[in-house]
Image 1 (cartoon, one colour):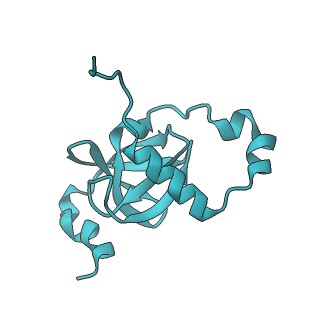
Image 2: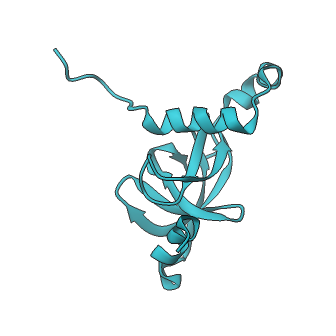
Image 3: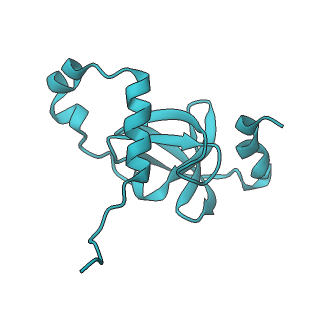
Length: 122
């Protein structure tokens, strides 16, 4: 079985009820095959992209549909309202840096690994 088909087969069709549409609130992110930040990416997406959410939640990930892709997105990267994104606030700057899809992929991958919060180290 192909790994890109695994996410579709893992969720029963009866559980594929769309419950809401939310938006990516981080600069870049990924739709992943499995609910893990280390899983294969189906697609890189950018801030403000609309995401259809299914009922299924696995840990920190929500099963979702983005364009033709169905997979998992980190729940902490979702917002009920469309966020004000860097791309929207500074469009000329964002166009000038001219990121290609590979760079978007790596920025999204970094964002999935980044942990937000205070250190408990003393």
